[in-house]
Length: 212
Image (cartoon, rainbow, N blue to C red):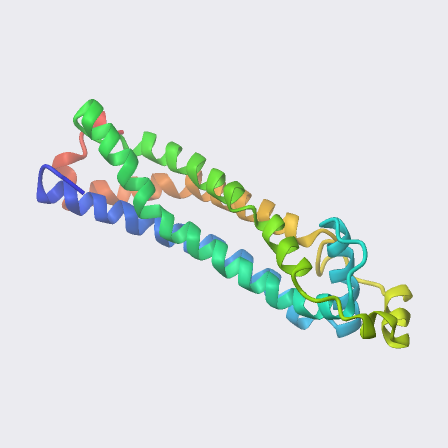
């Protein structure tokens, strides 16, 4: 990362840290809410919810083994997506920073904020979260013994009440929606606070009216 002054570099580092922290808070909070709900659901209700979720993913013949593996698969993909989003921040900031510096000789934090908001939503879509979970579920051997076991047949046909407040029927799609909504809100609401903090710090000399 090439910068003209030490102050430019300090601002660059602060921008990266701000967006990494902001994204980490939103994504971690949403992820923890989902995983805690799954962990604390009664086992029979959980299995029923996972079977419904499997249907929403287009898997209509889930085996008992696949259902029992689903929480681990979901947790792994949540972790991997979160890590990829977090790690993408520096490269995204650097790319736009270089482009704006080359074009205008300076960086507009407002423009940068808008571009990063678009980039992050695109990154979430590009990760293909739902497809990867479906792929991993289908990769689990079905286990014909359990499919024919009377307990699994009883469980599959049993109607179990699931509180709607606890978890959505298509909770994985809702999870993605919650993350996107939360991030977009933070990009709008928190940016002004961040900009104000920058003006109050030692960066006043490079934060002129054209910067905003």
